[in-house]
Length: 278
Length: 215
Image (cartoon, rainbow over all chains, first blue to last red; front, side, top):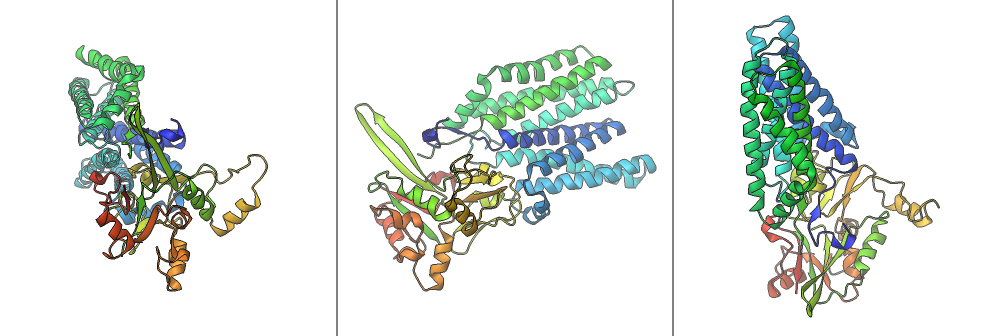
């Protein structure tokens, strides 16, 4: 973009996708993916899945956030603004997820089946969902980018997170867990994800010219059709329609969902353009 | 009280003096502008018109940047000026992304020189001492709050007395920029907005900017 085009034509958002902004994209994805995996692990009662998803959210996502903040020692201040800021809320949700999740995992080893363990499972699940919800609303709150300012976006991102999470749990439990149940749940999640993605993009066409421009930018490249549609949706759906997943197929399903989810979040962040000011 | 600015687009001659005055006033590093001119054309040949919009932070009444700031570093003062406390900013850049007018800048590299490879000039060194910007934080136009605050202590009136008025306003050679209290119905800015149907940028966003344009 030439300097004289700045805010006179559609100006792309770069702060959250280029350079250091790549960390934001990765932290959004790891948050969705890890939280989705925790919820899926809880539903299918996979302790290994819970540990892996806890590590993804608490260590990977948390680390990425600390890495992105240029003044990380000031992060404690985020508890002061939970009333209005989605990022502040998200930081608190992530911290509480990490805390309750750690306690729950210890309890699952030391006091499995007790009411205390169940209480912490419920608390961790609530904050896992909160982490997924906050990510969508953090992006959705930006009114200057109409493509993001859609109520369908948070739901679509949650759906991608759940699909990826189910794929992760499929790998974790593939050697003896409830693969039939997981395959059915994954199939439903994937169909819902595909439907929400189509709906979100379709809706973007009618949400003003800037939103339409973003939508065209997103679906205009080969990355969207190859990584999001083919690898992220079509290939896994074909695999899942073939019956319960074998261990090797489960790994392929996970890779597909990671590629699809990363590409979708990347596309959404990269395609966001600001309305011209004049 | 709510300080605001009115820019007369009919008077603006696109001389960029406001942009330079702002850079000088705050010793802004290379590539950073708190005041910009958006220049474009409207119409179709042969009836084409060049349009110039000087833009700066709108110091919105319903400032999105203040709402999204996770640490409370961005605040709106009682006089309506939106300021950033560099001591509290974590550099997350949510405000930069959220500002629909794109008037915030992330200051990441404090090693940039106006003459790369030749070291910082004396002006740059003095600037860093007088107006230190903290690397790793977000910066933006402050309506020259230092001038306003210092002027107020001396009993001067911003928008009327030069010493208490933003640099971009006093430097404008055609007096296209006006500064004053939007809450005072008799102030120069309120009269201009009322009589010449002043309009802010993108009013539909509901941010209630404090910078108005008259044509």
